[in-house]
Amino acid sequence: MDYDLKEQMDKKDLLKTSFCLIVPMFNEESNVDECVKSLCKFLNNLDLRCELLVVDDGSKDKTSSKLYELKKEFKNLNVETHKANKGYGVANRTGASYALSKGYKYVLYMDSDLTQDPKYIYDFIDLMKKDIDLIKATRYSDGGGTNGVTFQRKIISLGGNFIAKFFMRLPISDYTNGFRAIKAKLLDGIDFEENNFAYLIEEVKKVSKYAKSFGEVPYTLTVRANSHSKSKFVYSTSVYFSYLKWIFKG
Image (tube, rainbow, N blue to C red):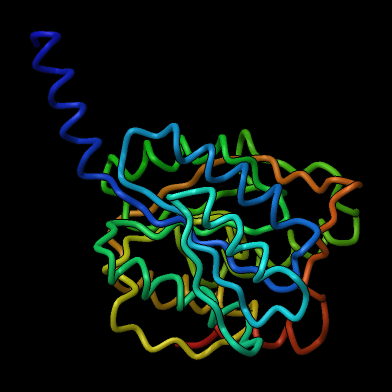
């Protein structure tokens, strides 16, 4: 194939790929500057249509005021604000609705605690260009792993994902990972119920009924000792039961 023709085709393919990066936040005043600046600068270097949407889920600290100051600095940043804390699942759905309203092909979700390196977005884009419906980052396949995660959390996470993989039988290895991309149209019209972290399992369960293709991005989750961000996820009996409910639900 002629090199110039191939280059034109590659550019045309790239233009078809667009995504809205969704980051839910709740009381992240110590972390918001570093998170937003690193992501917006990364997105600025991409030659495709994309933006960062932060969903401020009812923060009571200075997260909101800092976000609106950052919005003046970065044109590729937008903010949706919940007046009250509604939960992780609702924040995700707010982000998806925004992406749909703006005509993005994909919704890409990341956490605000900087445990997920933006460099892995390149691998997501490669799979987006292949038109994959549901893409999950994974700690549990070749090339994936963790750094700084406690042994207890590793065991609990591995056990939960083993159960999910065994019963749900999907071609993914990391069901509970919040670092993922989904075609926006697949989320349109689905009646989601979970407001908190069990939303991740509900989402996989319901989207998988419509998704025709799956992909994974191996990555290393790195928990920094000096991170200002504190995980809002707590391992509890109620969380286990809410996860299991969606694993076994028909």
